[in-house]
Picture 1: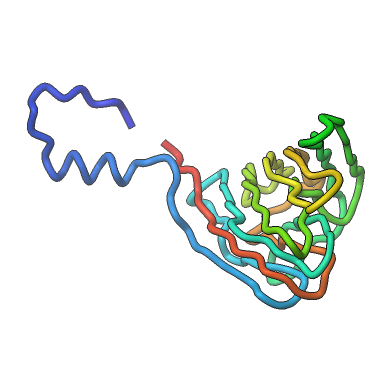
Picture 2 (picture 1 turned 180 degrees about the vertical axis):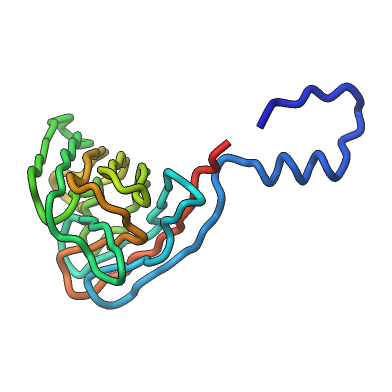
Length: 188
């Protein structure tokens, strides 16, 4: 969409509607889980958008755990060929940490939580619906009550050229809370 130069001080409803409809992020859905070890969000990736942003607003678990993600299609998660690196910095010591994963069963996400604290993260997913490798970049927090708490980032790719329609966000406990909002990046 070309940028319009307004020459009068009157903004018409047509102009307003056009610019609102062509905004960058478009709401797709929201989902939450309060029991089980995963949040499954199917039928969110399509030809409408190439890239997506998922904001995980609230994550709580029964005990210390990290989060992971798998791509889904036809109601099933793919559990092979994930590559990712998670980097972090401890708030109190400034010490850096890295967790690398090659040919794993899920992406490591930049979010570590425990029973006492809630945490969140954002994840951008690139080209999940196209039949090619899917990439991701993410920012989050380690909200542990003690030791290791800090800022985290992660990125990587799925080394399988396939089309996916959903995602599964998993933590290592049998129960907890996960709430997420999914947006698509509008293609201009």
